Image 1: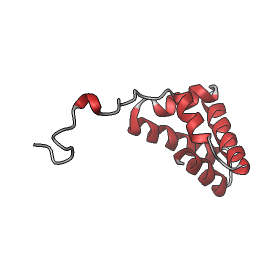
Image 2 (image 1 turned 30 degrees about the vertical axis):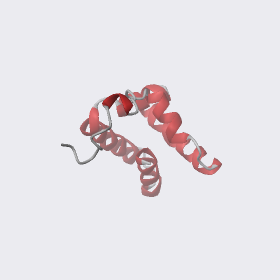
Image 3 (image 1 turned 45 degrees about the vertical axis):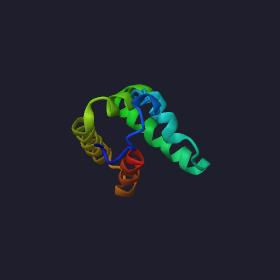
Length: 102
């Protein structure tokens, strides 16, 4: 017997589990409800990341989200190195990397 559900609950009574969201849907959800200044900063960070990848923002998000956590971490580390090579301030680098985790 499963202690998490009462024995009278049938599987057909449970809400369906949604399929995976598309990267554009994830980006839209990530940006939704943000304050205007936060929204502008997140968009700027995403645009810079996309420009580094030479991709659209949707394609950049897809590349970051579609290959698992290990690949995403590797991509973030490579982006960090690229920002360092561009002589961006450490605070700018920290903000751009933090924006991608929020």
